[in-house]
Length: 379
Image 1 (spheres, helix red, strand yellow):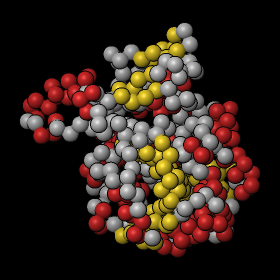
Image 2 (cartoon, one colour):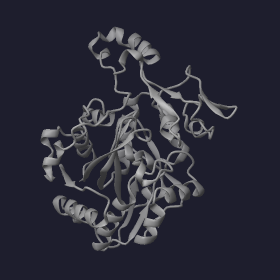
Image 3 (cartoon, one colour):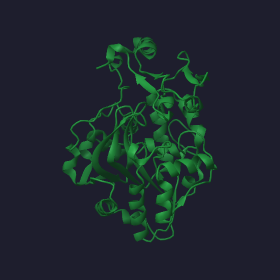
């Protein structure tokens, strides 16, 4: 199915969201995926402890509308699950569920919040990775529904359908993948392997309020007034790129999906619903980590040497604003290369070993870590 539905959804008011989700179901024929008795896992974006108004996480009312649509179709065994950044423990999950508004939503809609912190190894015959450890509620589900948040991402460019699935990997095993795949393109290719392994049946996008700039946590909320949906996550991400004026090559997951023959050109994707809204976003600020694209024009024999220079001097780096830093250690905990130390209550980065994955920027709870571009490429 190569359709993507777009529905104008101006606010998080329940009746508007119910109408939007029903429209998505009808336009895409999603009832064919469902039957009573299915064990369904909903996978939102719950990156960290942030309130719904901060636009870092999937809004609970979007999840609630999906839950109501499922129950209307006889699906009642529904679990909400994610492995956010940081520790994958009952205490950490409970705190994030509560802050993100999922605890109240789950009680009201009578669904389960996952507190099982186990995982299962799933072997795969994909491109880069032979097996993934996948959190139990995803590994054991009959059907998984992906409910992402439209955001920019300092490493992968876009946080959309494919990137949201990284939360299927448990806890601090995620930094291990960052260390194995230091380059943004290689890391995103690994995410395609992950998507091919967990195979979300349906993906919804919360783009009522999105995040622009230096996402996925340090950007700025922007009202975009839409929800989107598709069965094909790769087509959905292609449409998201078009929506926010991001070139496909800047969204590394999209670029990798094209290279793997999994994505279709935008012109080959059938848009349904409020299709005119694809041009509704006039301006959307992209990450400061936008790649400097001149190396590919050089002869291959010199590209390696140029890469070494650009990585050291031109690639944007995370910078800690010490006055804002509270010394909580979240950045050090999430750093794959273990280059961050807490000294005298402040965080410090050893740039000699920094792999520029921006996990520290992503996980800082007080936005004390900024992404700084070279002076040569600041606008």
